[in-house]
Amino acid sequence: MSAPWFESSFVRVLQHEYAGSMHFDSADSKLHQPQPPQQPCQLYVHVPFCEVLCPFCSFHRVQFREEKARGYFNALRQEIRSYHERGFQFSDVYVGGGTPTVVPAELVETLELIRSLWPVRTISVETNPNHLTEAVFAALQSVGVGRLSVGVQSFDDGLLRQMQRYDKYGSGAAIRERLAEANGKFRTLNVDMIFNLPNQSLEMLERDLQTLLELRVDQISFYPLMTAATARHRMEKSLGTADPGRRYDFYARILDAMQGGHSASAAGTAPYVPASTWCFSRNDGAPGAPRMIDEYIIDQDDYVGVGSGSFSYVGGWMYSTTFSLNQYRDRIARGLPAITQSKRLTLKERMRYDYLVRLFGLSLPYDYIRREYGRSFWIHMAPEVLSMRLLGATRHDADGIRLTPLGMYCWVLMMAEFFNAVNAFRDEMRLHIRDELEGAAASEVAVPLSAVRHAHSATRGK
Image 1: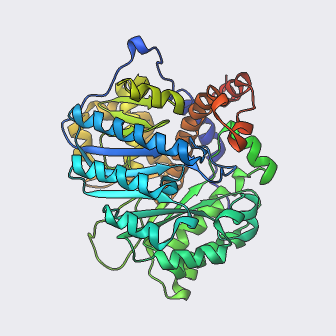
Image 2: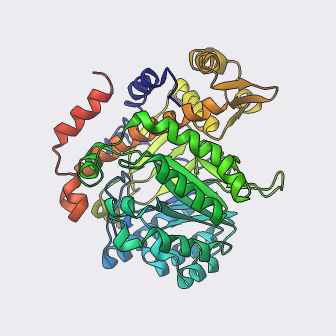
C-alpha cells in the first residue's frame, strides 16, 4: 500500500495552520480566568510524576520523588476545592500524567475529595504496567474508578528496551500477564499503544495486534508517534528516527485488525469498533451500549484542567496552568489561580476546533452546528468542509458529517499535528523551568530556547 497522494502537502498545511494555535497571553494583569459554564463539564487532573521518563514522551512530566509528589497532591486538592467554591460543576473525571498511581494513597484521597464535592458519573485513571497489582486495583475500585488506561506502547522486548521501559515495566510477556489479571477488574480496561516507532516493523505490529486480540481487553488506543523538539533529541539517541512514510501502512493494518480483518477472524475474537480515529472499543453485540473513551475533549463543550501543565477550554477560551511545580505550589498556597496563560479563540478558530475535535469522534451532527453557529458555520468553514469532501475524507449524511476510512487517517494526521503544536508549547514552557528538572528531563531541555523557537518557526514555514 502507499500513503494518499496528498499526504505530504496536507501535513505541511496542517503544520502551518496549527503552529500558531497555542500562542497564549501571559501578562498576569490581563489574564482571563474561566467562569463556570451553564452545564457540568469534564475535570482533567494532571499528575506529572513518572518513575521512568520515556524518551519519546512529550507530556509535562518530572522524575518521581515521593516527598515532592505528596506536596504536589496537597496543592492539587486545594486547587480542586477552589473550583468548587467558584461554582463549577463537573460530571466526569480524567486523571492523566505522568503516572497518576505513583502514590496510590494520595490519588485515592484526591478522588475521594472530588466525589465529595460533585456527583461525578465516570472516573478514568492512567497507569503503567508495574502498577497493575491487587493493592492498586482495590484502591482505585474503592473510589469508583470505572476505567483504567495502561500505557504499554508495544509488547516487543527490543522496542521496550530501546524505550527504556523493559527494566522498570517488564517484558512483553510479563506485561501481557498483568493485563490478563487486570481484565474484568474495571468497567473498561484500555491499553495505550504507539505505532510508527523507529525500528518498529509491520511484523512487530502484527504480533502486538495478535496479542491484544487474544487478550480481548475492552479498549485499545493506537497513537501515532508524536514527539516534541526537546524530547526528539533524546529519542533519536535511543530509538532512532521515525519514518513518516510508513505511517499509513501501519494505520491501515490497525484499522483492518480492529474491525475484523483476517487476523481477528482467524483468532475467533470479537472485532472492535472505532470510538475515535485512534481509539477502538470491543464490540460484544450490544448496540447502543455506553463506551468510555480516551479523549476527554470529544463530547464535552468545556473541560477544566487542574495541576501543573494542564489545559482548559471553557466558553471559547483556552487556558494553561503554570508548568513550574514550585510556582504551582506557591500560587495555590497564596490563594492565586494556577492558570498563568489564556487565549480567546476567534469565531473561526472555535469552528475549526469543533470541526477537528467532533469529527475526531467520527461524526459532527447538523443539530450541533445549528445550535452553536447557525448558517455562519457553512460560510466560514466552506474551504475546509469542501476540501475534505472532495478528498473523500467525509460524507454528508442526513443527520451530520461523518468520516470515511480515508477520513479517519486524515484525522489521525490532523490530531497528531494539533498535539504537535501543543507539544511545541510544552517545549517552550519546560525550557523556562530547566532549573527545576533533573535527570532525563534536564537533558531534554539542554537545548537552547532560541534553537527550539527556531525549530518551531521552521514548521510554520517562516
